[in-house]
Image (cartoon, rainbow, N blue to C red):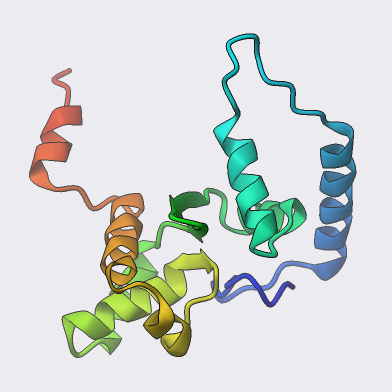
Length: 158
C-alpha cells in the first residue's frame, strides 16, 4: 500500500492483486497516447494526471485508490490537486460521535475523506486557510449532503 494515499476504511486489499492491477494499468497508460482533437481542446483528466504526477502520485496509485473506494473526486486548486472520496453513513456517524466541536468534526472528516495528499493534523495546518472549509464542503457534497435548493433542482415528479 502506498504511504501517499489514505486508504483507511477498515479493510485491506490483497497486495498481490493490487500490484498486478497497478502493473497492468501502468502498461496500459504507457501504450495510450493522448491526441488533442482538431479543435485544440485538451483532456481535463489528462491535465489532472499530469498535475498529480508532478505532486508525486502516479496513475497506478490513482487507480489503486479508485479500485479501493470506487469513486474518487479531484479538486484542483492553484498548483495542487486534492483527491477525495465520499464517506459512508457509518463513517459519518462515527466521526460525529467522536467529535466534540464542529471544527474537530471537519478535521476528522477531511482526514478520512481526503485520499491525496494525506492531510493529518500537521499537514492540514500547513494548507491555505480556506482549503479546510472547502474540502469539508466538497466531501459532504460527495457524500450526498445537498442544500435544499440543490435537492429541489434535481427532484422530479413521477
